[in-house]
Length: 140
Image 1 (cartoon, rainbow, N blue to C red):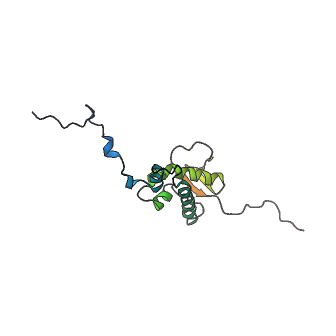
Image 2 (image 1 turned 60 degrees about the vertical axis):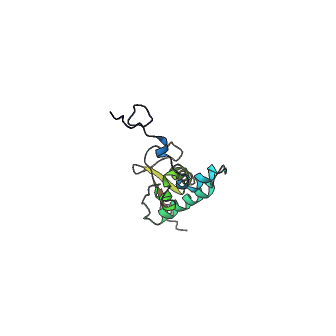
Image 3 (image 1 turned 90 degrees about the vertical axis):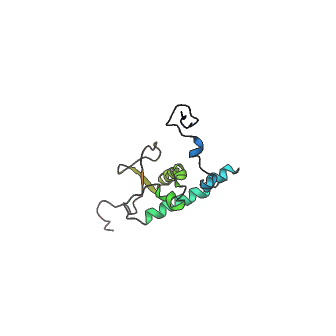
């Protein structure tokens, strides 16, 4: 009688060996590898600046009221490892919103960038139109 192949996880057939899901060092985003090599900040400032620039660039190429998914920026910069950059991308987007450069939206409505962000978000530029003046023009 043949014994079933052992998955060395006991009787849990759904368990997966962690060695099967670990990423190779060569697959890691550049800032992750640098952090592992002893640079405590990695290249975090550079990555943040790249993400900020890419978010603004992508939004400026769109119609004024158009939005973008935050994942578009890291996908454009690091197509193989963009998922590793999503937390920092959301942080960068939050800072851009706090600086008044973009709005973070959920379900089409702007949200407070200081509030906890849960669930899907989108980004859009703050309106470029000058504020309208109300009232009659000066006749002086």
